[in-house]
Length: 243
Image (spheres, rainbow, N blue to C red):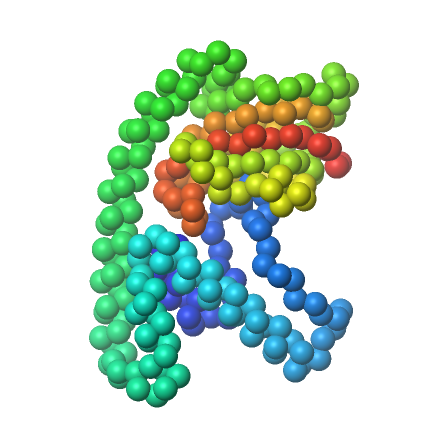
């Protein structure tokens, strides 16, 4: 979570956007029960609730990334509620935000450059493993199990239902429909390139493991726990081609 996204959250009552479409819906917060057409008072409460959950996500992400100090955030909130917060000139505050943002970007870019070289070596070694196939784009895949030979095969514009678990190279899970016990559905032309290409190699019932180079995933704009220039590994089961 970059500080600019956090700053935007403090100003706008809107969910944060991660950039490119994610491979599948991220875990949802507790749903807000609402009628089809809520009145103004009810809608105000619902939007206020969403504002709070969005802000919490932004703050948690920034703290986890080491960009902000949790204790100082709480101190600032407490002082603001108590009316004892220090008054800072708006121009000075803006300059502070911009300077800190530049420092974060420089740090991120430095780490991203090193990641690209490391990714290349990792993918070269991974591609030598038995059962690993590499496509012309650089996508690597392994067939874990096969479904029926006559199972439907999706096209780039197909809507699909899948179960998946996404991990980084260190094995840390960053997203999983399996853990949520809820299959994901999405159009193949609305996800990362590695998924659009990879799912078209499968038939209903197949289980594949995809190792996706960063350029076929999120590149330097990897959101949240993914981070910049990350190689992503997905175990995917194609349950059904929906159209």
